[in-house]
Length: 278
Image 1 (tube, rainbow, N blue to C red):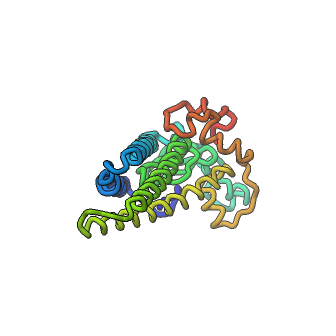
Image 2: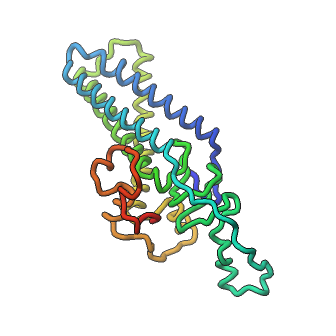
Image 3: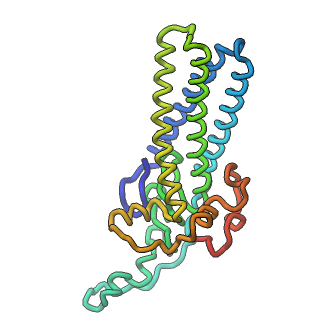
């Protein structure tokens, strides 16, 4: 679930911490079940298989936590403060239709943050500040997804998909090669089934969110813009669409190393200045 800027439902920072805590609990629970219930009991019979499972799982889990931390701690970016514009006459009789629509510089000025909003910038009521190239507010990272942390958020989604897929696949292989033998009481078996269900549900949910995000990224759309377009049935050609490859480079950069590692980098190292706000 995620909220949008300039309106919509608001998820408080406190609720975001609860949701992050809930997610952390599921990660820890899944990790314990995977290691101590699924893999370790067959380590003597299948030592190489178990070693591969444990190493692979923990590498992906480490990258997941790294990208999660990066998406949570990296400020998405906000415009600098600036003095308010001169007041525009409020009398509708003195304004043309165009003026009423544009309302001069006031339409792009946020009085809460005391700043001008460049194109694609929106005020987030959860963070209570304007966010550059705002995509959406995500309670799972308790932060807005915007200009500077969109790549880390993508990586967080990717490593979730990899972790759940890897865990489900290897755990399934484990039970097949051991002929589903579990030398433990029935409640442990139920625990494994419960964890399986959670993993499959999480995998489906995160994959759907990733697909929606990826489709937007290929078109250089944000979730806010897609939402507005769907509400207004706006079919105007997206002025920010530079072609799929260039659009993806705006988020991921041209260096392959940055595609998969949530390294803190200067935005100018990722994209040329002409694409800085796009």
